[in-house]
Image (cartoon, rainbow over all chains, first blue to last red):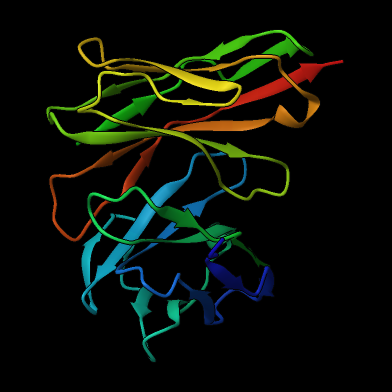
Length: 114
Length: 117
């Protein structure tokens, strides 16, 4: 079964550093998402991406965050200057089309900011 | 904006018994999807079951079934013949279909399910 692949599985970074989280969505999917889950809390929507542009972003997704699809396969989330409170599990997801319910999550990247 | 409420932070059930996890949601939309996701200690998000709002018939996947009450905006998950591998965090999620290009999921706060051997 096709998978959404996320790398790295765990990243430790120093406060103030930039990090890039990478995702390879399922090849025929058109919609891409990033979600965040702080330890012990619920999963929160960050941003959705369709047709090479952001279609919606949450209040969490401020100027320190950016997304891009640089080469037609990868989908990246960049955090420009990490803060301690950015420590969380970050999930990438992709879906095929509106009415189809193939909405697949990657296995996540655990980001630890020290 | 849609909200999803899971009022049971923790539940436990004896192995082989049946347990029901509750979920309610608030929306003004008539067309949407509802999901239950399982999150084991590995923290991967695993789809358990999904329900299209336009379908009256409750979804079933093997030991997992839902009780979807659209008028009451209720979407409970029933797990029959509970197994030790069912122990996990369970999240209820709502997916809007009203905004083209964005089918984000809105999650509840989760229910931690413990299986007692």
